[in-house]
Image 1 (spheres, rainbow, N blue to C red):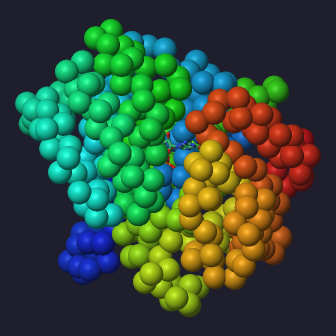
Image 2: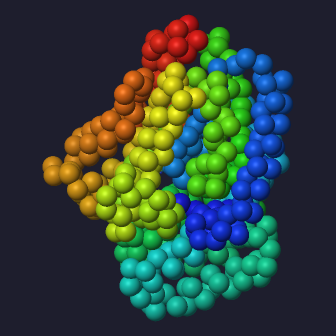
Image 3: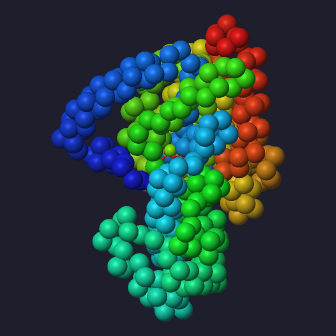
Length: 385
Ligand SMILES: Nc1nc2c(ncn2[C@@H]2O[C@H](COP(=O)(O)OP(=O)(O)OP(=O)(O)O)[C@@H](O)[C@H]2O)c(=O)[nH]1
Ligand SMILES: [Mg+2]
Protein backbone atom coordinates (compact mmCIF):
# COMPACT_ATOMS: atom_id res chain seq x y z
CA UNK A 1 0.00 0.00 0.00
CA UNK A 2 1.05 3.59 -0.42
CA UNK A 3 0.52 6.18 2.27
CA UNK A 4 -2.83 7.84 2.70
CA UNK A 5 -2.66 11.23 1.07
CA UNK A 6 -5.16 12.97 3.29
CA UNK A 7 -4.25 16.60 3.76
CA UNK A 8 -1.25 16.46 1.45
CA UNK A 9 -0.69 19.35 -0.93
CA UNK A 10 2.53 17.88 -2.33
CA UNK A 11 2.00 17.94 -6.08
CA UNK A 12 0.19 21.27 -6.11
CA UNK A 13 3.13 22.64 -4.23
CA UNK A 14 5.50 21.51 -6.91
CA UNK A 15 3.53 22.88 -9.83
CA UNK A 16 2.12 26.29 -9.05
CA UNK A 17 4.09 29.39 -8.10
CA UNK A 18 0.97 31.14 -6.93
CA UNK A 19 0.11 28.26 -4.67
CA UNK A 20 3.68 28.07 -3.51
CA UNK A 21 3.51 31.72 -2.38
CA UNK A 22 0.21 31.06 -0.62
CA UNK A 23 1.63 28.03 1.14
CA UNK A 24 4.72 29.97 2.17
CA UNK A 25 2.40 32.45 3.86
CA UNK A 26 0.56 29.60 5.53
CA UNK A 27 3.81 27.97 6.63
CA UNK A 28 4.86 31.25 8.25
CA UNK A 29 1.56 31.46 10.09
CA UNK A 30 1.89 27.79 11.00
CA UNK A 31 5.39 28.34 12.34
CA UNK A 32 4.15 31.13 14.61
CA UNK A 33 1.46 28.78 15.86
CA UNK A 34 3.99 26.03 16.46
CA UNK A 35 6.24 28.40 18.39
CA UNK A 36 3.30 29.39 20.56
CA UNK A 37 2.50 25.73 21.12
CA UNK A 38 6.10 24.96 22.06
CA UNK A 39 6.18 27.92 24.43
CA UNK A 40 3.09 26.47 26.13
CA UNK A 41 4.75 23.06 26.15
CA UNK A 42 7.75 24.48 27.96
CA UNK A 43 5.49 26.02 30.59
CA UNK A 44 3.55 22.78 31.01
CA UNK A 45 6.35 20.27 30.77
CA UNK A 46 9.41 22.04 32.16
CA UNK A 47 12.69 20.28 31.49
CA UNK A 48 11.89 16.80 30.31
CA UNK A 49 14.02 14.63 28.04
CA UNK A 50 12.55 15.25 24.60
CA UNK A 51 12.15 12.27 22.27
CA UNK A 52 11.00 12.98 18.71
CA UNK A 53 9.34 10.32 16.60
CA UNK A 54 10.18 11.00 12.96
CA UNK A 55 9.91 9.04 9.71
CA UNK A 56 8.16 8.86 6.35
CA UNK A 57 4.38 8.78 5.86
CA UNK A 58 2.56 5.79 7.28
CA UNK A 59 5.74 4.28 8.72
CA UNK A 60 4.14 3.63 12.13
CA UNK A 61 5.06 6.73 14.20
CA UNK A 62 1.62 7.26 15.70
CA UNK A 63 1.28 3.54 16.34
CA UNK A 64 4.43 3.68 18.48
CA UNK A 65 3.12 6.83 20.16
CA UNK A 66 -0.16 5.00 20.94
CA UNK A 67 1.82 2.09 22.39
CA UNK A 68 3.61 4.52 24.72
CA UNK A 69 0.20 5.75 25.86
CA UNK A 70 -0.85 2.14 26.46
CA UNK A 71 2.38 1.05 28.18
CA UNK A 72 3.38 4.15 30.13
CA UNK A 73 0.25 6.29 30.47
CA UNK A 74 -3.45 5.55 30.89
CA UNK A 75 -4.04 4.07 27.45
CA UNK A 76 -7.43 4.58 25.86
CA UNK A 77 -10.19 4.34 28.39
CA UNK A 78 -12.72 7.15 28.14
CA UNK A 79 -15.93 6.36 26.34
CA UNK A 80 -15.54 9.44 24.18
CA UNK A 81 -12.09 8.30 22.96
CA UNK A 82 -13.33 4.77 22.28
CA UNK A 83 -16.35 6.03 20.34
CA UNK A 84 -14.07 8.23 18.24
CA UNK A 85 -11.83 5.24 17.46
CA UNK A 86 -14.87 3.18 16.60
CA UNK A 87 -15.84 5.82 14.03
CA UNK A 88 -12.31 5.79 12.61
CA UNK A 89 -12.29 1.99 12.33
CA UNK A 90 -15.65 2.05 10.53
CA UNK A 91 -14.27 4.64 8.09
CA UNK A 92 -11.09 2.55 7.61
CA UNK A 93 -13.20 -0.52 6.77
CA UNK A 94 -15.18 1.33 4.11
CA UNK A 95 -11.91 2.74 2.76
CA UNK A 96 -10.41 -0.77 2.49
CA UNK A 97 -13.44 -2.03 0.60
CA UNK A 98 -13.08 0.81 -1.92
CA UNK A 99 -9.33 0.34 -2.20
CA UNK A 100 -9.77 -3.37 -2.97
CA UNK A 101 -12.22 -2.50 -5.77
CA UNK A 102 -9.82 0.07 -7.29
CA UNK A 103 -6.95 -2.39 -6.75
CA UNK A 104 -8.77 -5.04 -8.80
CA UNK A 105 -8.87 -2.55 -11.67
CA UNK A 106 -5.16 -1.74 -11.28
CA UNK A 107 -4.04 -5.38 -11.33
CA UNK A 108 -6.60 -6.31 -14.02
CA UNK A 109 -8.76 -8.80 -12.12
CA UNK A 110 -12.41 -8.77 -13.13
CA UNK A 111 -14.92 -8.51 -10.26
CA UNK A 112 -17.87 -9.44 -12.48
CA UNK A 113 -18.54 -12.66 -10.52
CA UNK A 114 -18.93 -10.50 -7.38
CA UNK A 115 -21.47 -8.10 -8.91
CA UNK A 116 -24.34 -8.99 -6.60
CA UNK A 117 -22.13 -8.87 -3.47
CA UNK A 118 -20.83 -5.45 -4.50
CA UNK A 119 -24.41 -4.32 -5.13
CA UNK A 120 -25.47 -5.47 -1.64
CA UNK A 121 -22.50 -3.80 0.07
CA UNK A 122 -23.05 -0.54 -1.83
CA UNK A 123 -26.74 -0.61 -0.86
CA UNK A 124 -25.73 -0.57 2.82
CA UNK A 125 -23.08 2.11 2.44
CA UNK A 126 -24.99 4.41 0.02
CA UNK A 127 -27.24 6.12 2.61
CA UNK A 128 -24.16 6.85 4.76
CA UNK A 129 -22.13 8.41 1.96
CA UNK A 130 -23.42 11.94 2.40
CA UNK A 131 -21.88 12.23 5.84
CA UNK A 132 -18.52 10.69 6.74
CA UNK A 133 -19.44 10.58 10.42
CA UNK A 134 -22.44 8.37 9.79
CA UNK A 135 -20.38 5.50 8.33
CA UNK A 136 -21.01 2.37 10.42
CA UNK A 137 -20.14 -1.29 10.08
CA UNK A 138 -23.72 -2.40 10.65
CA UNK A 139 -24.68 -6.12 10.81
CA UNK A 140 -26.29 -5.90 7.31
CA UNK A 141 -22.90 -5.35 5.71
CA UNK A 142 -21.10 -8.19 7.50
CA UNK A 143 -22.34 -11.09 5.37
CA UNK A 144 -21.74 -9.60 1.90
CA UNK A 145 -18.47 -7.95 2.96
CA UNK A 146 -17.15 -11.19 4.46
CA UNK A 147 -18.10 -13.10 1.30
CA UNK A 148 -16.47 -10.36 -0.79
CA UNK A 149 -13.25 -10.59 1.28
CA UNK A 150 -13.14 -14.39 1.14
CA UNK A 151 -13.83 -14.56 -2.61
CA UNK A 152 -11.14 -16.00 -4.88
CA UNK A 153 -10.98 -12.74 -6.85
CA UNK A 154 -10.39 -10.48 -3.85
CA UNK A 155 -7.86 -12.87 -2.33
CA UNK A 156 -5.97 -12.69 -5.64
CA UNK A 157 -6.16 -8.88 -5.58
CA UNK A 158 -4.97 -8.91 -1.95
CA UNK A 159 -1.94 -10.99 -2.87
CA UNK A 160 -0.89 -8.13 -5.17
CA UNK A 161 -1.65 -5.41 -2.61
CA UNK A 162 1.71 -3.68 -2.95
CA UNK A 163 0.84 -2.70 -6.52
CA UNK A 164 -1.86 -0.29 -5.33
CA UNK A 165 -2.92 1.69 -2.27
CA UNK A 166 -4.33 -0.44 0.53
CA UNK A 167 -4.47 0.13 4.28
CA UNK A 168 -2.12 -2.14 6.25
CA UNK A 169 -4.82 -3.42 8.59
CA UNK A 170 -7.17 -4.70 5.87
CA UNK A 171 -6.87 -8.37 6.81
CA UNK A 172 -7.06 -7.59 10.54
CA UNK A 173 -10.35 -5.65 10.34
CA UNK A 174 -12.06 -7.64 7.58
CA UNK A 175 -11.52 -10.80 9.63
CA UNK A 176 -13.07 -9.20 12.72
CA UNK A 177 -16.28 -7.86 11.19
CA UNK A 178 -18.64 -9.89 13.39
CA UNK A 179 -17.22 -8.37 16.55
CA UNK A 180 -16.88 -4.85 15.12
CA UNK A 181 -20.50 -4.78 13.85
CA UNK A 182 -22.05 -5.44 17.28
CA UNK A 183 -24.18 -2.49 18.35
CA UNK A 184 -22.33 -2.15 21.66
CA UNK A 185 -18.88 -2.64 20.13
CA UNK A 186 -16.08 -0.53 21.59
CA UNK A 187 -12.56 -1.05 20.25
CA UNK A 188 -9.90 -2.79 22.34
CA UNK A 189 -6.26 -1.67 22.37
CA UNK A 190 -5.29 -4.01 19.56
CA UNK A 191 -8.08 -2.58 17.38
CA UNK A 192 -6.93 0.95 18.20
CA UNK A 193 -3.29 0.41 17.23
CA UNK A 194 -4.45 -1.02 13.90
CA UNK A 195 -6.46 2.08 12.98
CA UNK A 196 -5.12 4.57 10.48
CA UNK A 197 -5.37 8.33 10.36
CA UNK A 198 -2.61 10.48 8.89
CA UNK A 199 -1.23 12.86 11.52
CA UNK A 200 -1.69 16.54 10.75
CA UNK A 201 -1.08 17.89 14.26
CA UNK A 202 1.76 17.68 16.78
CA UNK A 203 0.97 15.23 19.58
CA UNK A 204 2.93 14.96 22.79
CA UNK A 205 2.86 13.03 26.04
CA UNK A 206 4.96 13.09 29.17
CA UNK A 207 5.65 9.92 31.13
CA UNK A 208 8.08 8.64 33.72
CA UNK A 209 10.60 5.99 32.79
CA UNK A 210 12.85 4.61 35.53
CA UNK A 211 12.64 7.90 37.39
CA UNK A 212 13.33 10.02 34.30
CA UNK A 213 10.66 12.24 32.83
CA UNK A 214 10.29 11.80 29.07
CA UNK A 215 8.44 14.09 26.67
CA UNK A 216 7.58 12.21 23.52
CA UNK A 217 6.47 14.06 20.39
CA UNK A 218 4.69 12.52 17.37
CA UNK A 219 4.44 14.42 14.08
CA UNK A 220 3.08 13.74 10.59
CA UNK A 221 5.39 12.22 7.96
CA UNK A 222 3.71 13.52 4.81
CA UNK A 223 5.69 16.12 2.94
CA UNK A 224 3.35 18.97 3.91
CA UNK A 225 3.75 17.95 7.57
CA UNK A 226 7.55 17.70 7.47
CA UNK A 227 7.77 21.49 7.19
CA UNK A 228 6.89 21.57 10.89
CA UNK A 229 9.71 19.28 12.01
CA UNK A 230 12.54 21.84 12.13
CA UNK A 231 10.81 23.81 14.86
CA UNK A 232 10.91 20.77 17.10
CA UNK A 233 14.59 19.82 16.72
CA UNK A 234 15.95 22.21 19.37
CA UNK A 235 16.87 20.39 22.57
CA UNK A 236 15.65 16.99 21.34
CA UNK A 237 17.92 14.42 23.00
CA UNK A 238 16.63 11.35 21.24
CA UNK A 239 15.14 10.73 17.78
CA UNK A 240 13.19 7.58 17.08
CA UNK A 241 13.31 7.34 13.29
CA UNK A 242 10.71 4.90 11.98
CA UNK A 243 11.15 3.10 8.65
CA UNK A 244 8.40 1.09 6.97
CA UNK A 245 10.28 -2.06 5.91
CA UNK A 246 7.64 -2.81 3.27
CA UNK A 247 8.48 0.55 1.65
CA UNK A 248 10.92 -1.30 -0.59
CA UNK A 249 7.92 -2.60 -2.54
CA UNK A 250 5.77 0.55 -2.56
CA UNK A 251 5.82 3.37 -5.05
CA UNK A 252 3.55 6.18 -4.00
CA UNK A 253 2.83 9.29 -6.00
CA UNK A 254 4.43 11.30 -3.19
CA UNK A 255 7.67 9.34 -3.60
CA UNK A 256 7.87 10.12 -7.30
CA UNK A 257 7.40 13.86 -6.69
CA UNK A 258 9.79 13.78 -3.79
CA UNK A 259 12.65 11.93 -5.48
CA UNK A 260 12.49 14.00 -8.64
CA UNK A 261 13.67 16.90 -6.46
CA UNK A 262 16.96 15.14 -5.68
CA UNK A 263 18.34 13.91 -9.00
CA UNK A 264 21.91 13.89 -7.67
CA UNK A 265 21.09 11.89 -4.58
CA UNK A 266 19.19 9.24 -6.53
CA UNK A 267 20.57 8.74 -10.01
CA UNK A 268 17.63 6.82 -11.49
CA UNK A 269 14.20 8.22 -10.83
CA UNK A 270 10.84 7.38 -12.42
CA UNK A 271 10.35 3.65 -12.05
CA UNK A 272 12.76 3.71 -9.17
CA UNK A 273 10.63 5.94 -6.90
CA UNK A 274 10.27 3.54 -4.00
CA UNK A 275 9.00 4.79 -0.65
CA UNK A 276 12.07 3.38 1.11
CA UNK A 277 14.28 5.69 -0.94
CA UNK A 278 12.25 8.67 0.24
CA UNK A 279 12.69 7.43 3.80
CA UNK A 280 16.43 7.20 3.20
CA UNK A 281 16.54 10.77 1.92
CA UNK A 282 14.49 12.06 4.85
CA UNK A 283 16.75 10.20 7.27
CA UNK A 284 19.86 11.58 5.58
CA UNK A 285 18.51 15.14 5.99
CA UNK A 286 17.46 14.65 9.61
CA UNK A 287 20.69 12.92 10.65
CA UNK A 288 22.70 15.74 9.08
CA UNK A 289 20.79 18.47 10.88
CA UNK A 290 23.00 20.67 13.11
CA UNK A 291 20.27 21.03 15.68
CA UNK A 292 20.34 17.25 16.18
CA UNK A 293 24.12 16.90 16.18
CA UNK A 294 24.18 15.50 19.74
CA UNK A 295 20.95 13.54 19.64
CA UNK A 296 20.94 9.76 19.94
CA UNK A 297 19.24 8.12 16.96
CA UNK A 298 17.12 5.02 17.43
CA UNK A 299 16.26 3.45 14.09
CA UNK A 300 13.03 1.45 14.18
CA UNK A 301 12.82 -0.83 11.16
CA UNK A 302 9.10 -1.35 11.45
CA UNK A 303 6.34 -3.65 10.13
CA UNK A 304 8.53 -6.74 10.49
CA UNK A 305 5.34 -8.89 10.41
CA UNK A 306 4.26 -7.51 7.02
CA UNK A 307 7.85 -7.50 5.72
CA UNK A 308 8.20 -11.23 6.40
CA UNK A 309 4.94 -11.90 4.52
CA UNK A 310 6.13 -9.83 1.59
CA UNK A 311 9.66 -11.17 1.13
CA UNK A 312 8.69 -14.41 -0.64
CA UNK A 313 6.63 -12.37 -3.14
CA UNK A 314 8.72 -9.29 -3.86
CA UNK A 315 12.49 -9.09 -4.21
CA UNK A 316 14.55 -6.27 -2.72
CA UNK A 317 16.54 -6.03 -5.92
CA UNK A 318 14.32 -3.66 -7.96
CA UNK A 319 14.52 -1.12 -5.13
CA UNK A 320 18.24 -1.59 -4.46
CA UNK A 321 19.94 -2.73 -7.65
CA UNK A 322 23.14 -3.64 -5.76
CA UNK A 323 21.34 -6.29 -3.72
CA UNK A 324 22.26 -9.59 -5.33
CA UNK A 325 21.73 -12.17 -2.61
CA UNK A 326 18.96 -14.58 -1.79
CA UNK A 327 15.84 -12.65 -0.66
CA UNK A 328 15.90 -14.02 2.90
CA UNK A 329 14.92 -12.05 6.00
CA UNK A 330 18.50 -12.04 7.30
CA UNK A 331 20.05 -10.83 4.03
CA UNK A 332 17.45 -8.17 3.25
CA UNK A 333 17.14 -6.76 6.76
CA UNK A 334 20.91 -6.49 7.08
CA UNK A 335 21.22 -4.81 3.67
CA UNK A 336 18.51 -2.23 4.51
CA UNK A 337 19.93 -1.61 7.97
CA UNK A 338 23.44 -1.01 6.57
CA UNK A 339 22.04 1.47 4.02
CA UNK A 340 20.47 3.60 6.74
CA UNK A 341 23.42 3.39 9.09
CA UNK A 342 25.71 4.55 6.28
CA UNK A 343 23.32 7.45 5.58
CA UNK A 344 23.81 8.59 9.19
CA UNK A 345 27.56 9.02 8.97
CA UNK A 346 29.89 10.42 10.12
CA UNK A 347 29.56 10.70 13.86
CA UNK A 348 26.14 9.66 14.99
CA UNK A 349 25.12 7.38 17.84
CA UNK A 350 22.71 5.16 15.91
CA UNK A 351 21.01 2.09 17.36
CA UNK A 352 18.98 -0.10 14.99
CA UNK A 353 15.95 -2.11 16.17
CA UNK A 354 13.48 -4.30 14.29
CA UNK A 355 9.89 -3.72 15.37
CA UNK A 356 6.24 -4.62 14.89
CA UNK A 357 4.57 -1.49 16.21
CA UNK A 358 1.11 -3.09 16.44
CA UNK A 359 2.47 -5.57 18.98
CA UNK A 360 2.46 -4.04 22.49
CA UNK A 361 4.85 -6.62 24.00
CA UNK A 362 7.36 -6.13 21.19
CA UNK A 363 7.37 -2.34 21.62
CA UNK A 364 7.63 -2.66 25.39
CA UNK A 365 10.73 -4.84 25.02
CA UNK A 366 12.34 -2.76 22.29
CA UNK A 367 11.75 0.48 24.17
CA UNK A 368 13.41 -0.94 27.27
CA UNK A 369 16.47 -1.96 25.22
CA UNK A 370 16.48 1.47 23.55
CA UNK A 371 16.48 3.39 26.77
CA UNK A 372 19.28 1.25 28.12
CA UNK A 373 21.42 2.05 25.09
CA UNK A 374 20.43 5.71 25.26
CA UNK A 375 21.37 5.97 28.93
CA UNK A 376 24.65 4.22 28.29
CA UNK A 377 25.42 5.88 24.96
CA UNK A 378 26.81 9.25 25.72
CA UNK A 379 25.68 10.65 29.00
CA UNK A 380 27.62 13.86 28.53
CA UNK A 381 26.16 14.69 25.14
CA UNK A 382 22.63 13.62 25.97
CA UNK A 383 22.39 14.85 29.53
CA UNK A 384 20.76 11.55 30.44
CA UNK A 385 23.18 10.30 33.06
N1 LIG B 1 0.83 -4.99 10.61
C1 LIG B 1 1.45 -3.88 11.03
N2 LIG B 1 0.85 -2.70 10.85
C2 LIG B 1 1.49 -1.59 11.30
C3 LIG B 1 2.75 -1.65 11.95
N3 LIG B 1 3.11 -0.39 12.29
C4 LIG B 1 2.11 0.41 11.89
N4 LIG B 1 1.14 -0.31 11.29
C5 LIG B 1 -0.10 0.19 10.67
O1 LIG B 1 0.29 1.10 9.66
C6 LIG B 1 -0.67 2.14 9.55
C7 LIG B 1 0.06 3.47 9.59
O2 LIG B 1 0.62 3.68 10.86
P1 LIG B 1 0.70 5.12 11.54
O3 LIG B 1 1.24 4.91 12.90
O4 LIG B 1 -0.58 5.85 11.39
O5 LIG B 1 1.80 5.83 10.61
P2 LIG B 1 2.45 7.28 10.80
O6 LIG B 1 3.91 7.11 10.62
O7 LIG B 1 2.00 7.89 12.07
O8 LIG B 1 1.83 8.06 9.54
P3 LIG B 1 1.70 9.65 9.34
O9 LIG B 1 1.04 10.21 10.54
O10 LIG B 1 0.88 9.81 8.09
O11 LIG B 1 3.09 10.18 9.12
C8 LIG B 1 -1.66 1.93 10.70
O12 LIG B 1 -2.83 1.31 10.20
C9 LIG B 1 -0.95 0.98 11.65
O13 LIG B 1 -1.83 0.14 12.34
C10 LIG B 1 3.37 -2.93 12.10
O14 LIG B 1 4.48 -3.08 12.61
N5 LIG B 1 2.67 -4.01 11.61
MG1 LIG C 1 0.96 9.57 12.44
